[in-house]
Structures are given as structure tokens and as C-alpha cells.
Image (cartoon, rainbow, N blue to C red; front, side, top):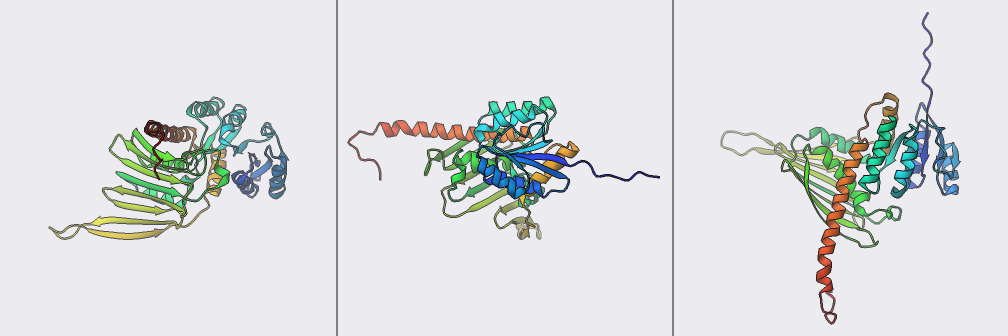
Length: 337
């Protein structure tokens, strides 16, 4: 007689940092089958209590209170606290889904990655656009990209002011571009400026790869119109993804009779929308259970961070080069209007 099959024990999880994004993490975990949301942590105790009541779990104001109580944790604290909080959990073998960017710099990012590797803990970085259905449809059709153009623009959002627009928005497209281009990055050039905050609010970067591929990406958080688009040109044609409309347009040359130029065949694919954050968290839970490598693991997040920092450094060089010219203007000269 065969023994009855019992479901595995529920995966015990928690969320550290339940601001705008962390709250959604908690709510998604609370409705996942086979997952027990043990609790949430936030230094703002009233916010922690409010989210805990909504998600049906316990609440603490100590970011480390979940250690010893959970198998895995989402960390959605401000970037400056990523290193301390993530390492504290990883060093105890607790699996971590860490919101992007990985860290404030590559030194701290590398230490987070090493902490996971030492303890055999799984580390996934929250570049949720990788779980966008449109991005997955685009990646499936990419063969040999030669030129990429990405735009990610929108209005100002107060909750993102702890980082500049490169770490807040552009890093999404940097990560996607790095995933699409199978070559070494050899040059980064960028410009940018503050507008509403002391940090860079609008930026443009040019990434040059060893195989000749060039990618231009623009990010703004001071634009009237919200735009999320990426275009990819390759010998086999052209692809354009509208993140907002979830449409993927293509233009592919089709051969005609001898002596005639190929005809451009245009088509549109309407992508079935999914909730990227739901898919990201489901993928994290799956990887914890199966020990599969995450789509965006620590090394992948570290590479995206490194390129974002190169963009920021290039902008700083550009600003420094412009400063002497402004300083050299005679005091009596009026500033340009």
C-alpha cells in the first residue's frame, strides 16, 4: 500500500521594508500557495503594523527581527541600507530577494554577493522588468542586435529621491541591454543634470560593446509624458517594444524577385500582460525551492550596478569639464538666459 503524499512544509518568508514597493511584496507573498508570510519589518512601526494587518501577519520595527524565523526574505529598504541588512540575513543562510540597485557601490555589492556564496544562500536582485512579458517576447526574437535605443521617461515621484535617475530608472534598461548583447562593454559616455533635486534627474548614456553594438538609453523623471520604449535594430530587421501598451512591433525584410529590393513586412504582436512583480516573486520562491539559478542573480545585479556607476562617473566628468568654463566668465558678464 502506498503512503499518502503530503504537501511540503510551507516556505516561511518575510519582508524587510514595507514602503511603497515592500508593501506589494508582502501582499503577494500573503496569497501565494505553499508560502507562509511570517511577518514584516519597518523602522516606521505604524507603517509596519498597517501592512501587517493588511497582509495578515506579525509586525516588527527591527529590520533584523525575522532572522531565525524565516527561510527567505524580501528586502526593500533604502539602497544605503542594502549592504548591512542583506548581509545580516545572507550570513545566516537566509535566501534574499533584494530590490535594485544591488548596493550603493560595487564594493558593497561584491560583499553582498560573496556573503550569499559563502553560505550557499540564494540571492536574487529585483530587476523586475526582466519579468515583463514584453521584454521576454523581445528577448526571444533577438539574434544579433547592432543598435539599441531605450527611453524611460516620466514625471517626478517623491519616493525615489534617495537615488538619482540612473539608479532609479536607467538601471532597468542597462540590465536589459546587458542581457541582450552578448559582448564585453568597452566604453561608456553619458551626460545628465539635476532639475528638481540635487541629484541627476535626466540622463543620456551611450554604451559601446566589443562586437560593435551600440546602445543609447535616456532616462528622465521630470518629463510630462510617460514613455517606456526600447528599439532594437539587427540585420534580420527591427523590433520596437512599448512597455506601457505591451505591443511588440517588428519590421522584417522579405525577399522578392531577382533585381528587386526586399519588401519590408511589418507586424504587431500584442503581448498578454502579466504583473512583473508577481512573476518576480513567484520565480524567487520557485528558485528557493528548486535551488535553480535566478534569472537575475547577484552577479547579474552587480554587473548592472557597475555599469550604472560608470554612467554616473561619466556624467560627473562632463559636469566637471563644464564648470571651469562657467567659472572663467567675468563677474560682470550676465549669465546666459
